[in-house]
Image (tube, rainbow, N blue to C red; front, side, top):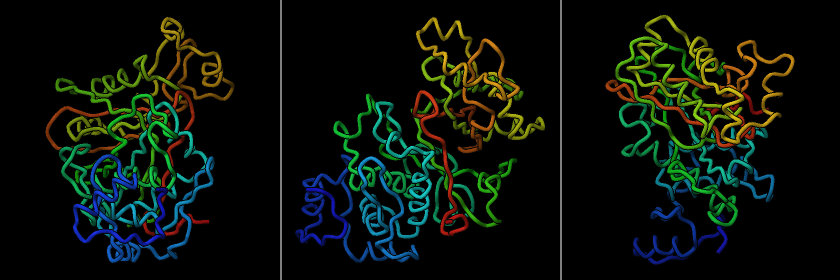
Length: 358
């Protein structure tokens, strides 16, 4: 049965029977969902000022639309508490921007999962995890906000695995891929600050992400050691493209980089310079395309691009870097873009305000 958030379904009072009913309708991601009872949906809607019929995102290929009410229903099913809802709304407003390529990033064989990075005070307000086990299990806000994204993609936009979602292998982030940027002990400006939102305003950044790559370096003690390891991961033949990247430095690695006086721009420039492969090397694995080289090395290209090499991205600004994770451990991560080129560009929106609604 097609998902219809407006319909009131009469289901058995027994909770397990109601969960089974949701399975029977095809409304789950494979895990049990919480039946979206009217009272809980209404409590969630109370955290959004627009009418429940207001559209916050649309699918360009199918014409299907996400209303505030449908988003709230899926948030409840995912297990979100009502005060998480503004983050979910802002995330879909960001994904609705044309450059994100909402259809391609959800339907392609590449296996994209929308990564959400929440920055600013709202992360602490709703109890998000920016610390130990950042990408792992155990935090309700992180897990259920990310899961609500997947349920909406499935239930509202009908991105069904094997039918409209053609991911060759997918990745675990397709269940949930949502983290908070760590503010405690962060020596660099938070993302919401670099995005030029007013003080006190939080943001969510969305990125059509490929699989997670752990970068381990317990022996390095200079920025070049740490970022050299990250750059090598970014430049592996399996994923180097002109696409964007996300790098989450652990506090241990961040303190080495920032402790040497490096700022975010210094780190971006270093990674962009060193995350590269030679044209001959790209040809040796059958991955070289003239158009990529011409695009990256065209007139007006970034000064750090060198002839005879393909770098990850077009400019250092294509690499988002911030801090997250527990205090102990030399483990950072690199997350590549979904597409082999510039198929999707990360976007951001403020949470719970309409600063840039126009």
